[in-house]
Amino acid sequence: MAVDLSGKPIAITGASSGIGLATALLCARAGMPVVLAARREDRLADAVKQITAQGGKAIAVACDVAEEADCRRVVATTVEKFGSVYAVFANAGYGIEGPVHETTDFDLRRIFEVNFWGSMSLARAALDYMIPARSGHILMCSSCVSKIGLPYFAPYSATKAAQDHFSRAMRVELAPLGVRVSSIHPIGTATEFFDTATRNSAKPAMVAHTSPWLRQSADQVAKAVVKCLRNPKGEVWTSALTRFGIGLSTIVPGLTDRALMRAARKLKY
Image (tube, rainbow, N blue to C red; front, side, top):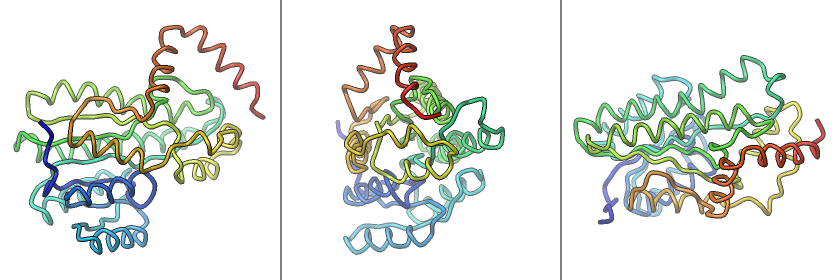
C-alpha cells in the first residue's frame, strides 16, 4: 500500500540547487514539511519562499555536511519545528576529475568527508529518532557509477559505491526495526555538478566531453525520489538502459576494461 506523505517531515541536504532543490519542491507539493539544508543560505531562503508561497511548509538550515554537528542540527531542527522526522535525503555531494596518482590526500579525504561521511552523519542523526518510532525512510543519492570504478573519477565513484554498499547493509539491518533505506542511482544530471567538477579539477577532460544531450533533468530524479517515498524500494535507477549496461559490465569485467581504455584514450590528459 502506498505511503501517504502528507504531514510527514523530510530533511534534504544539498537543497539549494539541482536534485536537492527539485526534490524539496516536489516533496512540498506532496504535502511533506521540508527542511532544506545547504551552505548557501540566500538560495535556501529563496527556495523556502517559493514553497511557502505555494502553500507548503518549509524552513532552511545552514549546513556543511562535512561537519557532523551540522547534520545533527538539521535533524534536531526538523523534529523541533515539525514534531518528527519521517525521512532524510542525503543528497549533498560533488565530484573531482583526474588520475588517482595525481589526486592529493586532501582532495581524496575531503570528497569522502562530504559525499560519504556527510550521508552517514545525517542517517545516524535521523536514526536516533526513527528507531524508537519504528518508522522512517533514509535515502542516499548514490549514482549509476556506484557499480563501476570510473577512470579519472575514482574518488567520486568510490564515495558513491560506499553509499550504495552501506545503504544495502542498512536496508537489511534496519528492516526489522521499521526503517526503510533506499539508494538513488541517477545518470548524469543537468545540475551544477559539472560546473563544480570543472572548478575543482586541474584537467576536466571527461566533464568537457559529456554532452548536455546525455543528461537528464533534476526533476526526473526528484520524481523518482518521491515515487520511492510513496512506494519504497531498495534501489532506484533513473535509466533502465544504464542499469542494464552497468549490470552487464560487472559480468564481463575484461570487456569493460577494454571499453574504458578506448574511451580514456580519447581524453586529453
